[in-house]
Image (cartoon, rainbow, N blue to C red; front, top):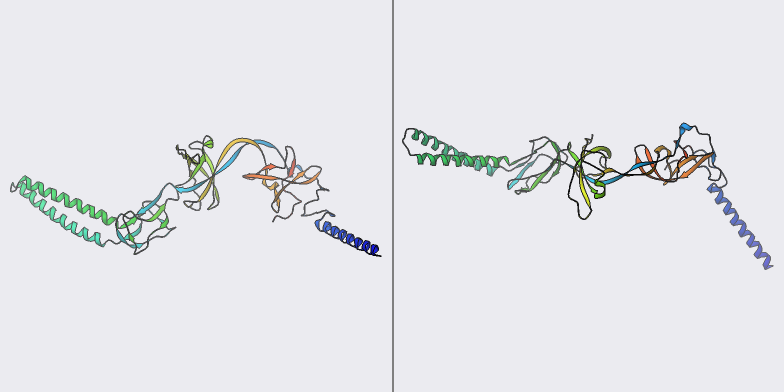
Length: 350
């Protein structure tokens, strides 16, 4: 009796497992063909008759291998403006991002002390000038000595030099932009005490931008002065052309690199100093497969192409760099295979 009950329970358990297996296989699609927008079963490929102009024939070519090297965007004219006086900041007329013109006043310092010095220097100069003219007239009449004229002339020149020096000091109370450009930093506020040599603002010329890149020594021979190169910038996200302007001769002993300075073409949106950029250098040619980027599609994070033989096969591939509208295929395809330019049986990309 017990044996019969045990056998009945075993059959029930086996039947339950079988039902679960059938349900799982059905939900996974093993018992059906996925058609329309779904990938065809690997066991039963989709029959297709695709015109030749809708396919691409895979071909291996010896092509230069592009290498991207990170660099930093800077301006050829980037200036830190500093105070030449010890004075209180009276007014700040710009902020970071302000567009300024050459000789535009950016910061005003308290000029009261220097103005007083100027008044004193002007009075001394006027007195010395009057005395010099009077002595010269007396000398013309031979009513004074040559030594007196020499002393008056010396006092006049000294007073004039002092007046010019104070005038220059007064000009230092207005800090101006030496170029047309954009303000990068506003480093002081009204009421601050600006010390002599203290930076108060920064300005750069957005029309003279370059990319400074540490290039490995082994790649220096791949470039030359005046060569046109491709550059990509992160912010704004643009691809632009550049020209090799300078190759610094000193080699960094730690990184074994030489700094290469690349002048950049102008962009619609101004580039910011300090922005991350990449310089592309063509390395030695290597065996490469390039296919139109439209041939490659994704299912989740997995990349596929559709190979056309007697039927369409969904082929897993590994891609590399993108070159214009072409994508490098690192593995998964061979010479002579035909692939669809616009895959027709693919899952909706996520």
